[in-house]
Amino acid sequence: MKITITSRHEKLTESLRFHVEQKIEKVERYIGKIKEAHVILNFEKKGHTCEINLVAKGVKMSSKAVSRDMYNSIDGALEKLESQAKKHKDIRVERHHGGRISPFKSVTHGLIPQPVEGEEIRVIQSKKYSVKPMAVEEAAQQLAKSRDEFMVFFDAETGRTGVVYKRKDHHIGLIEPEY
Image (cartoon, rainbow, N blue to C red; front, side):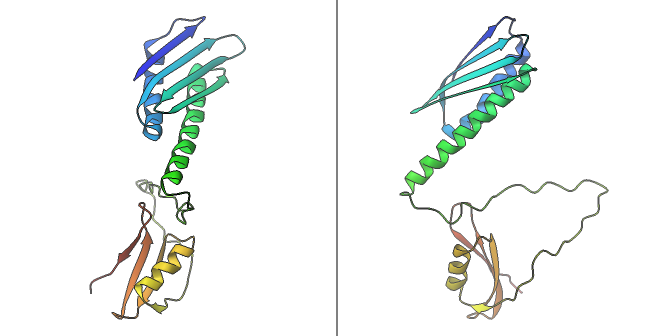
């Protein structure tokens, strides 16, 4: 990746250069290998402006942010670029899947933060529902239609409780506990 940084009205410091390079790498995970990045840092009395132009395989993106601190301007411009790159990736994935709308778009797979030491862990009951006897296929179909990430059901064939869940690869997983 070729990164060109232009600094206007002030000398470019190594810490600014490192900050820009490190942040641009985050955008690369959404749009693939970046061929060229041109960053213009403009230091003025009214505000510091950061303008970024990226060229990747079949994609040209640009963003601009202004603030009183150059680091905030860089972060703001790169947040805008990251948002554009996410949208571009979603469009590519949707085209690849034939334009069909996936029922899994509402599912967000995030990391659960680790509990803070000394903080008590509480179990919060959020939902009660009855476990219905049904076949695995029926449970999977009901889960695909719902917005839930998982569903507990009573397997009519085996006589055991099971869990079906939505996977990141847009398939349905099955958990069958052993007693």
